[in-house]
Amino acid sequence: MQYQIALLRGDGIGAEIVDAAAAVLERIGTLYGHTFNCTPYLIGGCAIDAVGKPLPEETVAGCLASDSVLLGAVGGPKWDGLAGDQRPESALLGIRAALGLYTNLRPATLFPALRDASPLRTDLVSAGFDILIVRELTGGIYFGNRGYRQGKYGEEAFDTESYSVTEIERIGRAAFEAAMKRSKRLTSVDKANVLETSRLWRKTMHKLAESYPEVEYQDMFVDNAAMQLVRNPQQFDVIVTTNMFGDILSDEASQLTGSIGMLASASLGDGTRGMYEPIHGSAPDIAGQNKANPIAEILSVAMMLRYSFGLEAEARSIENAVDRVLAAGCRTADLLGGQSGSALSCSEMAQKILDAVVRE
Ligand code: IPM
Ligand code: MG
Image 1 (cartoon, rainbow, N blue to C red):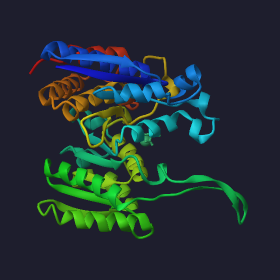
Image 2 (image 1 turned 90 degrees about the horizontal axis):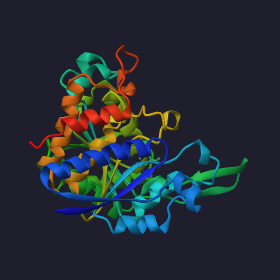
Image 3 (image 1 turned 180 degrees about the vertical axis):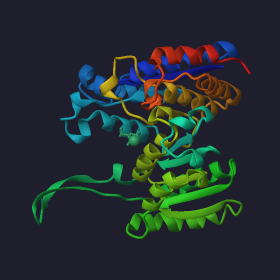
Image 4 (image 1 turned 60 degrees about the vertical axis):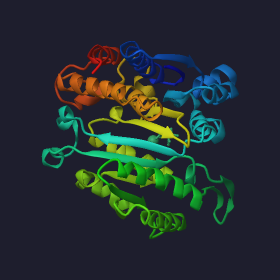
């Protein structure tokens, strides 16, 4: 099969990790007889520098004309002074909305070899954990009305959160469906003791739960969920939550797996086109130094193969290669976490994984 892939390298470490992942994709193509035609487009700070805006029309059109999108990361100190809607990050929200990608799957899995890299006590992670965070991606406070106004104490800023029943239903359905394919346990995270949006969220989830009697469903307040994640991550299977809570909890969960450099994500809508990206940012402090961990981006390619193209065996080839390389003791600097041992560079880690990818 032939697939058209839009490559959005973005800023900071984006280029290093996307190129590493694209090489893995090409290897999969060779091993399994697929052709992946990759076309690069600008997004984020590099697009501001080149054409004056973070999300050029050409990029949106290119993504819409592709079967799938592979993204690195956007942002950096160079563009931090810009107004909100001109910042690199606004392009990320813009492309997610333009492609209708309202479901964000963020799996937080502890690779057995990384148990020592987890900051949690060994007894808490000895059995491992495998959590899927389903984050709503195109609504909520990240997309609500915002601005500045004169308030009681002078100038003030505001952001608003709103969620429609339709938006909650579609992310809820995606989460229940995901739970049905796993261990049939779903935790919906909200703040229904305070927020009106959360009360509607909870009510809508309860109604959906009636259609999924096999799924063991529970509600949890977000503050408690943040605590439970570090107290006992094994209790969770699928977690569904809003845009902002999912953003925060997925960073927290990533750290439990050893490093934020491990977490991949899939952003999906109603069709098969998706956007795949690591959950981490552009890491300007190590950009251009060949120090980044390419694993989250490489695992994002595996998610692309699985969710957009239905290529399960190919996806597993990549995941197994990562597993083997970690089991062999290969570590980038972020995975050493202060322990002794020598760190591999980004390109060295990428090469190890590339060499370990075999047709299974
Ligand atoms: C993420 C990032 C983005 C988000 C930022 C950069 C806009 O933190 O993908 O988690 O909040 O979605
Ligand atoms: Mg985030």
